[in-house]
Length: 128
Image (tube, rainbow, N blue to C red; front, side):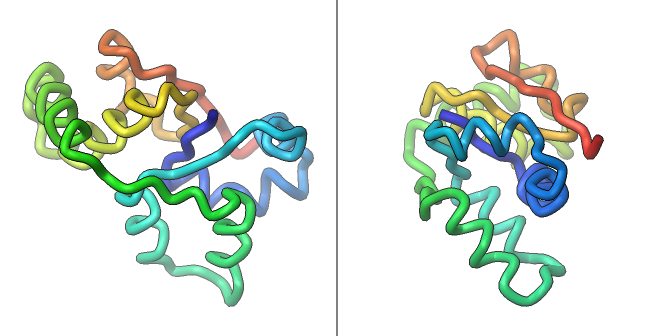
């Protein structure tokens, strides 16, 4: 299972054109998803016409709901990472990926690095 961060969803069209290994993993049958918080951030846009529909199809509609256990773990992660305001949403997103047992793909490795010691399987990515 792969969970994508908002910036990774934004990169998907570029990655698809470039034949990126992460796209290949999904095309070859590995499940891909995002948590509802990532989907919300993504839909804030700006998006080109039809872009959200393509991303939704790529994910096979897997927009995972946020659960109470995500809130609990997210708060623990936020506190453990030093309570930096910029990590509030990232801690919740990381909690959802940890609960799902998913690899977490992001271009923003620095912000998610503090959660690795707590079980986040971080997959650094780039636009290249």
